Image (tube, rainbow, N blue to C red; front, top):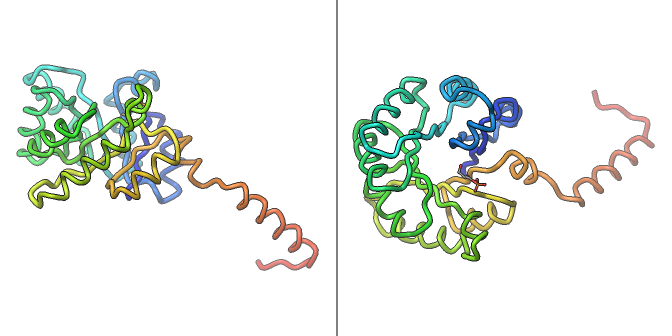
Length: 218
Ligand code: G3P
């Protein structure tokens, strides 16, 4: 499973990229607003740090303007992935952009029917928002299971399932068990994957015993 980080905070991205476990980055208008920076500057900096796909979301909703914004974003770097909303105009743009060789991430997916449309439109990634479904009392992971199953029925559908709106490690593990290709994680959730109290306890005991030996290795 690939791990993307869902943030526009370039300090966080640099730190997480240094782990060697980061495969890409996703941003959205809310995350760009939170960064307090200009979208073109932030995306360019992220693309310098992370060679994998970096999602930059258009702010337009009509086809012509989506295409104009996508052209500007694509010029930033080769690894920019154009993020479009799951609307008729967004999917029309997805088809045109993917036919022209661009990577496209279709966002704001909340149903299997929407995911099927995005795949037919040539999306590189479909982003189902599991946390926001959980928030309204629907099981986000049921949607992931449905999409993974549907895509696996058709060799012609190459779209990767990018699990978004991830809130906790259980989302990540459940999505991995279901065979989702990618999870985009808030930095805190990505860091949280390392943690287990028995790891901390075991390490403390090993270090205490080691200190008693008076030895050094290097
Ligand atoms: O970037 C899309 C998605 O991951 C947003 O997550 O936490 O705002 O529901 P969230």
